[in-house]
Image (tube, rainbow, N blue to C red):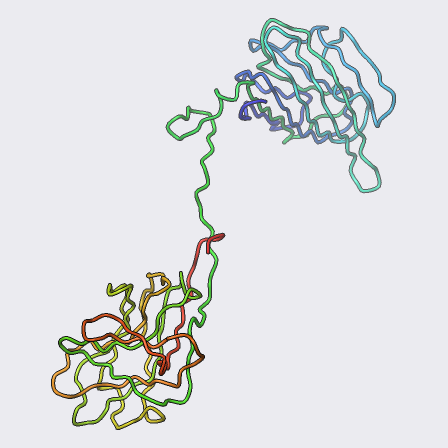
Amino acid sequence: MVGTWQRLAHASLSSAGDTINTGDFTPKDNLKIVANLPSDGNLDNCKLFVGTGGSIDTGSNYAFRHSTDGAGDGTNGSISGYYFTVTTLDAGVMLTAEIINKSGKEKLIQSHSVLAATGAGTAPQRTEVIGKWVNTSGQINTIRLTNSGSGDFEAGSYITVWGASDDVVTDEKDALTNVEAGTRYEEIDTRKIYRRVVSETLWSETGTGSMGFQTVKQSGWEGDNGIIVPSSMAGKKVKTVAVKMWSQNSAQSPVGTFSCHIYNGTTLKAQSGTVSSGDINVGTNMYASGFSSVTFTFASPSYALVTGDYIVISSDTTRSGGGYVQTVGIAHQGTGTDRYYRTGATGSFSNSNSGTVDMVITTADEWVERNTA
């Protein structure tokens, strides 16, 4: 396994010509070459020369085997240069090549070239070549491409060389502080992806009002009325609680505010915004009609419900005199389950199966991390 690939050299022609030189680059054990060589006339016997110590070797130190368009192989030994095309054609060339560049070993090369004349009427040619440069005294650190045909490589022709060592540890860095100039590092992606969860109705018990539950706060007795949270609601966050309420009569109408509380045991976990008693209709026995529809809103829901929590309507103002507000109750919905809860004289919750608070509970739209509940 090789290490991280790095770009070692890039060279291009500012004007048409027959030669492109990379100049010197830092040698690596593995090299990759990509060259784009559009033609200005015929290209013929295009060669790749390599060198070490900054000096190109043009001697007869190359050997290669070649095939054009899948035809039988031709071979050449002790020849000057590695031929990556072996035909004469007025066509541009795309060259890709790989080199094993081990010091002390002959340098093995394989390449694939596409020769493409202009226009849709002529299919490209392909040239496949394998070969070697027999030098064992060092590593390749400079490359030259040449054309022997009557045409030129056009202006803009280029060669790019990448390299990687055989040692993964030396070119791969695990942190920004462990990065040297000219190397590459990869950072672990810590981004999270969220999905939108739309609001839903968690609880809905509504019907024709048949009773009123006193909702009042006074010393020694907490008049909270609501439901106990079933397991189906666990983990949800409450946004709104809608109920029906009225003040018993004008003479005893209390002053102050009301809100929705969420308790775990007797510990308050969340509290909604308030509703003023002055906004609630006044009358006697208004459970069937004439009541006010009241919605309590939790501005920023954050508490996740637990099975056995209590969601209750509470008076926030201590009662003075005889006034109180009624929360509408309906005939018990279903059998065998006590759903109506109120606090007793000691502040603890008790239940009743004689009726249920007319109540609708909903969640808020929210964003949750993908692949979580």
